[in-house]
Amino acid sequence: MFEKAKAKIEKNREINEQYHSQSGTNWLQSFFNVGTRGEYETYRILSSIQGKNKCIANCYVPKEDGTTSEIDMLMIHETGIYVFESKNYSGYIFGSSNQKTWTQTLYAGHGKVEKHQFYNPIMQNKTHIKYLKALLDDESLPIYSYIVFSNRCEFKGLDVDESYRVIHRSNLIKSLNDDIKNRAALLSEDRIEQIFEILDKQSHMDKTIKKEHIQEIRDEKKMINESIKNGICPKCGGKLVLRKASNGPHAVSEFYGCSNYPKCKFSINAQQDSSLFKRLKSNKFHF
Image (cartoon, rainbow, N blue to C red):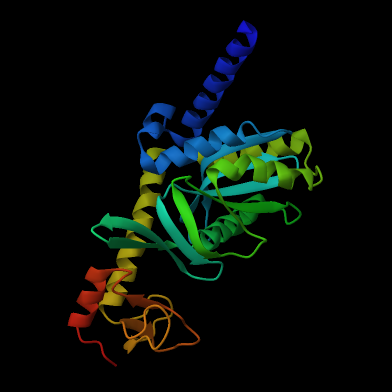
């Protein structure tokens, strides 16, 4: 009994040290940080998966333009590479496989709700996998995508193709074990170690590079907002046109859509970003 407890403590210590080494954040910091708590919990779950495997947190893979794409979590397993995008959201989650943005809905009291848009995590993970494949330069590697949400949220009207895994963290172990059972062991222990050595270096980025990555995200968001404020579609460069929804749940409500529709389906309405929508409307870009 004592030996089992001792082994468990040692295992937990090893997991915590590995996570701290790769992410730069210790377990206590993660516990009190909403943004990283989900990643740490996912890391712990992956460390308990059966079979030969290695886990990596916060892996920065290079893009062709010289910037980086950050992968929250990945597991190099004998059956392939598993890439995880962690979302520690609460409230109701709405979205579909091909929708560019998903919606988080929260109750704000007195019968009111707050809605927040976030980039489609399926598309986000596709981008991560694209650059991961380029870095490893091995098309034969099987790579699988998993979107892991906090247990505090509830999926509502989530229209996702069955080939994608969008699950709650409480279902992660079961989902992974079920999938692994149906997949052949393709990677040897040596190959797992080779891939780990390549990717582990990408997690030990210095603080300067991590700050640059955060700044890249901020700059991109600023560029998109500036484009919208000037009545220009940030997706294709077309003009933004004021329109009214003719049907659906938002019938009669106003929104700005790209003049290149249906080729470009970019749009913005007051529910997505009320301050940006008001700023855009005040500029009278009614083409």
